[in-house]
Amino acid sequence: MFTPPAYLSPSSINTYRECPQKFKFSRIDGLQEPPTWHTHLGTFVHEVLEHFYQVDADDRTLDSARALATARWKESGWEEQVNGLLKPLGSITDFKKAAFECITNLWQLEDPQQTEIDGMEHEVLAEVDGVAMKGYIDRFIFGDDGKVVIGDYKTGNPPNPRFKSEDEKFFQLLAYALMLEAADQEETSRVQLLYLKLGASHEVTVTPVKLAIARGVIVETKEAIDNACTTGSFECNVTKLCDWCHFKPICPAHQ
Image (cartoon, rainbow, N blue to C red):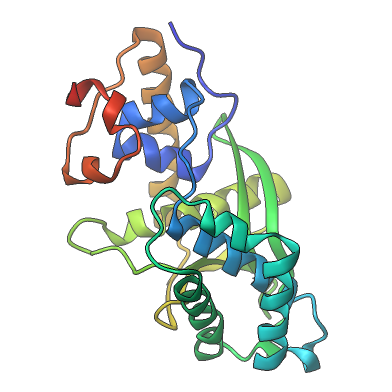
């Protein structure tokens, strides 16, 4: 009845597992969610840090980060973008303050002058057990052992462990590890979630067991999506999160 997407991403797999109907709206019907305060904040901070690590190591200072943030703000028209939000959570000053706080907290995680990033916003296309996958890795570094350390910047709070297990929290990065292995034969040693808002890093060592769990999630979710496309049945997972879902007004569960 429906044609499955040509490829899946770790985030789209998470969307399906959270709510198949939301996945249908976004990946099958092609409906786009408008940007939010939080997504704009994350995108702006990512943009600044991507350019920051292209600067010579000796010039990676807080002052240069501030100057670079000011330049990216103007060149990418961020004030207009933030002013165009449907539901802003504060003023332009509030947005700038939150963004620069995240950028400043980078120094609590690492010394930028001593850190060389080998890849940022790296596109990966790969097949994992026959499942076509595509994604963008925030950053990766080759360790002294030649293995990859994958990192992901987060500008929000860590998920509550009551609602998301460690394997779920790190699924996206473990999926990237599988994709790098399949596409480039690169082995990953560790994956890191860099919570800039808190200046905290959460990381796990990549093990065969963790990769096997992530691989199973990818394959099982692909099978479920193909079955839903064949039957036309995309279940609605009704939870408290529905109140924050852009698609609630058109969702069958809320009609």
